[in-house]
Amino acid sequence: MTDSAARFDSARDRSEPEVFDSAPDETPGLSRLAVILIEIALAVGGFGIGTGEFAIMGLLPDVASTYQVSIPMAGYVISAYALGVVIGAPIIAVAAARMTRRALLLILMTVFALGNISSAMAPDFWSFTALRFVTGLPHGAYFGVAALVAASMVPPNKRARAVGRVMLGLTVATLVGTPIATFMGQMLSWRAAFFLVGGIGVVTVALLWYFQPRDTVHEGASIWRELSAFGRTQVWLTLGIAAVGFGGMFSVFSYIASTTTVTAGMSVSMVAIVLTLFGIGMNVGNIVGSRLADVSLKGTIGGVMVFNVIVMGAFGLWAQYPVVLCLCVFLIGCGFAAGPALQTRLMDVAADAQTLAAASNHSAFNIANALGAWLGGLVIAWGWGFAATGYVGAVLSLLGFGVFAVSAALDKKAVAA
Image (cartoon, rainbow, N blue to C red; front, top):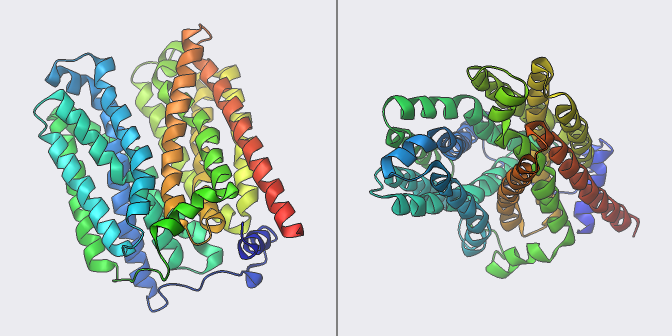
């Protein structure tokens, strides 16, 4: 971690914005209205990506029926998309090191739009799976670059809130976009849902083309400079917090339908309400967490990890009670509060290799998704019950806090030196 980054983070955690040592605003000529319109354009892209990523989960039976494969086999398309995110984020960030952010965002969203439209027209299962992989490639790079663009338009002490507003597109997708796309897919055809997501991508391209001003390639930008991010211990630790600490959320979320009906004995119709509570929690967490992060970045990350340990432990103990389950699901969704903080933290610790680090954050989140779902499935297979996914979540959150503690200790050592 550079001395300036250490001073920046230390100052923020003391709530002393006047001593920030940070790069100046990259787009000082923008009016407040222009900034809002750019943030909306970026958030619309996040809304489309979130809708496309999660809608498939409710449409798997329809996909399986169309291609005459089993539902578990149809699940390969979800894995293919996640693999695309994990692989695409770092590769694209490095390959596009000499590209302007505006041009990169336009290309990424164009690939996303075409990938979804092509997915809707895929003639067979394997071509559909391959197209889902291709569609996942821009995911992480888009969110990473969008976060950098949003942060560059506001003062340093408001960066996390700007990042949160862009990520609001993703969290709103879980609450609004996914149910709409799922309903459309069930009523018309799953192909219609992907046409819808592709259309959102086209709209995003138009909005970015019109509202985002042209920029220039940063001086000294190169492939090697971006790769230098992976030579920084704090970058790996921050990505580790996301990859491990958020695994708990996905461990619970992956099996929440069965936990609701089997463990809590609630009706199938209540699953949609429980999922809605999770979506509301994610939005609340995103808004509140981004504000807290602008006050204390490390305090927010560490505090949310501890919060998750407690809430997920309570879920494991008392998920059989419907009221407690609903409350815990909402609070687990609120655990997304660490998302904007981690994204902003990566901007600090990556120094001048921010694009690769910011994009890799979403690779880490998808690793958390895979890790949480896998470990949750293991404890269920071992006969511990669906509520035990909460214990998995508590352990993963505790491990995430441990990684955070190491990161904070190294920060303290660097400042002292």
